Length: 204
Ligand SMILES: [Zn+2]
Image (cartoon, rainbow, N blue to C red; front, top):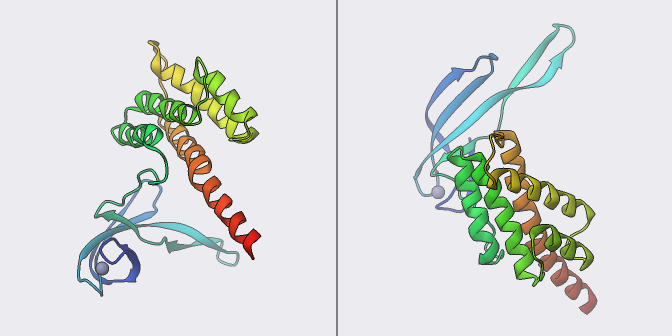
């Protein structure tokens, strides 16, 4: 079965050493599979879920398949891209940690802090995050859609940061973390990549 080996830093076709299967309430199967990397012999643990991949019209039944293996151990690194400057990446990292610890309001606050970091990096001399986002938009650093994501982050940051009985839900927190990562990737990683790409094109 295919799985990512962190030691070989590539996708390998590993040998199955064992598996344990369970069914969730919906009747879908979930299995954990112990794999041995064919190259370095490391043990890797992956997880796969059943999903309806096809529909048999004659039988009136769904046909189920197993999803590709997602590595559970060694835990995949899914931290911020190294090109994102520290002023934003430390908050992104903490946002993810808060989310994993089920501290959803704290995760929202950290997402807002990451975007504040983006503003600071771009010297958006703003008094607050709302001004900072406007500055990023007028300077052409983010487009309208990212501005809207940033605004959503800002509002939830406020919800998380100020004393109230309202809670940030798990779903909202997940989206906010995704938005914060996407904004930083766009501003620091993709923009730089596109600039380099344009430079290469102009040379040829
Ligand atoms: Zn390996």
